[in-house]
Length: 472
Image (cartoon, rainbow, N blue to C red):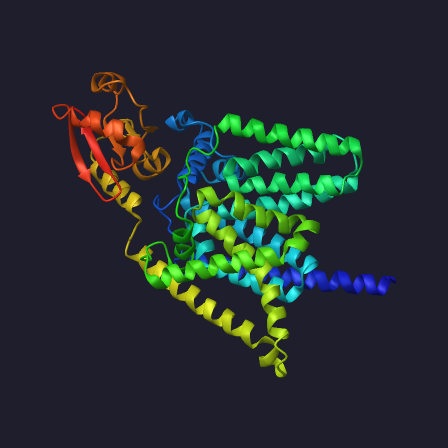
C-alpha cells in the first residue's frame, strides 16, 4: 500500500466518523426534543436509582441512607461525572444515558462493519437506535446500554492487551476491573468473561499469560459477586416472552394473542440467528458475547435482557436475511433487497408508533404501577415537614428516595413476631411494599396484628403504604 492509498483511507474514515457523529447528535437531539424521555424522578430502574443517588451523595458530600443500601452495581463508576458536575440533575442523567447508548451502538457498528459487512451494520445500528427497547432503557437508566458498552469496551481492551503483550501490565488489570464493572450490573454480563476465557483457551499468547487470565478472571468474578451478594435488585424468573413483546410494543401493551405471536417470532428469529452464527461465534469474541448474554440473562429476563435480544437479532440476523433475499434469485434492486426493505419499513413504522405512544404517556404522566404508588406516596408525605422529618422503609428504597427526596431504607428482615418487628422499626414512619409479593408475606401478616399501631394510607395496584400512628 502506497502513501496515497493510505491517506485516502484515512480521509474516508474521517469523513465516515464525521457523519456518524452528526447522525448520533441528531438522534440524541430528537429523543430529547420530542419528549421521549422523562425528566422527573419516576420511571427509573431501582439499580440505576441506587447508583445515581450514591454518586450524587458523594458529589455533594451529603450523609445519606443510600450508603446503607449496600454496594450498588458498578455502573456508578460510569455515572461519576454526574456526581462531580451535575448532582441532582435528572436531565444530565438522561443525556449521560444517551451518550452511553451512542457509544455502545458505535462500537457495535464498527465491529459489524469489520466482521460481517457494512450494509448489515448500518441497518442493524439504525434500527437499534430507534427500537422501543433502547428508548425504554434510556428513559429508565436501565442496564441494557451499559451491557452493550461493556461488550464493546471489553473487546477493545483484550485487543490492546494482546498487542502490548506485557504480562500483568496495565491492560491486564484494566480488563479485570472492567469485568467487575460489567458483571456487577446484570447476570447477562457473565457472557463477557466467558467469551474472554474461550478466546484465551483457543488463541493464547503463551501458557503463562493464559494462566494469568484464567486466574484473574475467576478471582474478579468471585470478588464482585461476594461483595454485592449477586444481583439483589433483580426479579428472577420473569416471563421472557412478556419482556420481548413489551420491548417492541410498549411496557403497557396487553398480552393479546398478537403480542404473544410477536414474542414467539422474535424468539424463533433469535434462535435461528444464533444457530446460523455458531461458526462465527467460534472465531469472533463479540458474537460469542451476544449469544451468551441472551442465554445467561434468561433467568432475569427484564428490559435489559430484551434489549440484548434485540441487538443480537439485528446484528446477527440481518446478514442472514440479506443473504436469504439475495438467494431468492429475483432480478433488480427490489428483487435483491425487497424483503429486507419491507421488514425494515414495517419495523420502523411500528417503532415510531410505539415511540409516539410513549411520548403521549409521558405528557399525560402515565406511569408503571410501582411508580404510580411512589407518586401517590410522595404527595402524601409532601406536607410532613423538612426532608429529615420522615423515615421510610421501602421495597424500592432507591426509587423511593428519588421520588420523595427523603431518606429510605430497605424493608426489615422477617422477625419472629409482631412485637419484635415493632421494636426494630421504632424510628420508622412509613412502610412501602407489595403485600402480594411472597417475600413480604411475613411482614404483611405481622402488620395485620398491629392494627392499633398502624394504618394503611395508600392502597394501589403495585402495593400499599402503611403509616405508624404518631408519624407525621
